[in-house]
Length: 616
Image (cartoon, rainbow, N blue to C red; front, top):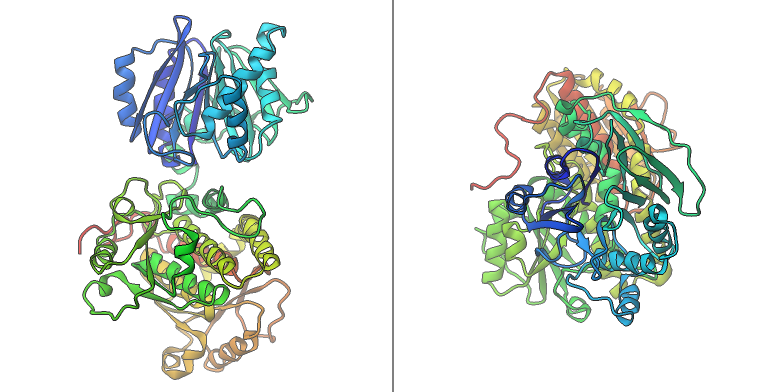
């Protein structure tokens, strides 16, 4: 996910663009860049690292142009280098481009362009797209000047497979921006004598509150005083101008009361970003670019070991269940803090994984180092490019969900669940999982974001349920199989932000001791989806109800529970086993959040906690 800002108007473009990039830095921050048109040429400044690095670099360039584009990058194609940073300029010097998304057929396009004499300075798919626009621009030499760039971009996008949000400049039309989207959000801001395009309203509201949300397969042309929108098939669009009803002071939270709820509602997009580019061309398996381990080596692995802390450990436990179910390989999960001190017997053909959102968790880093010291290869799942764990691991998978500000992890957790599901698919297809089963698995994963959206639509109902339980001091969370870790996560969320004492157990374990806690003052949250053990979970619920324990049941749509068994019911869509833990997590997050708000807790800054634990 990347941040995009484009400006055309009367003011100097660079200061506004850089300020916008700061507000979008959560969308990617391995590198940033800006390009403006001045003196009949592109003046480009770009730098790896944070936007602050770009700001220093831009000061050296003395950028004075009034039309420009800027970008903050999360690497997909090509490493983190100045050369790979956006904007990219075509080899003929005519076109500059910024891009969010993945061009899936960029290799074929690049081969074609090399044959036409175009050259490349980066490893990115974006530079390929930029040169393809330049190729069509040269072919459109007879088209009237002000529409030539528009038509060149339009023709280019007819040849593109994949996702994109782009903004293009041309040296021949110094007041013009062309922008288009497919699968990647873009918003136009309409100002007085200036027009703006960005990937988030946060970069716009300091100058205007009048915005247009571009739809997929729409393309727009902006000048300081005009704009027009059409489809890629040349149908003119009558735009709907919306008014942003929040100020720049609210921008960092996206209009939400807290970062946590903002990030809860970002999860469908976060899942799409974590999945992007990780499905094979035939749609039957997963693919990863940074594992640094061959399929042959992977096939030789006979055991997996996952180490993590807190929420990330719960994601590992779900991954354990999925790998053992779909790949039939034994998996062990361990607290990273315990692994480093215990003399654990380890099998020779074992592959280690560590999970950490920040990539800086000290116990997880120590577990990684201990495993490497013992001669094992260690792969990492984390969300921060350039973090210590990312640098020290032998390979890994970035979550690509952007910075997560809320201390209580939400979108980072569900993206870890998604990556775990992709891993289980990848390993399973190397073993006995059939092509057809792989296709069904992939289709289920692709549908996960929309299923999450469906659960999020129930937020008002869950908020009302939360109000009825906010006064309790104790709560139990119960689930089985892959949903036992989700019960653990639900209990952790509630503890973290509401300070209610909460515990989680496998549902069948209640009668082995914890049932002694049940009373009218101790509610239980049951995760009870359809399946072969549904009736077993209902039996556990009846044991709780017989002892007058209040029950919140999270069940599959269409489920009919015995009358009076549950005091409150939250419905989730029926879904594939690989997707179920993701979908079931959403009610846990919303319930915990709304209970904490009702209790007047500081949701984003819970006591005694920090986002990244870097001390032992």
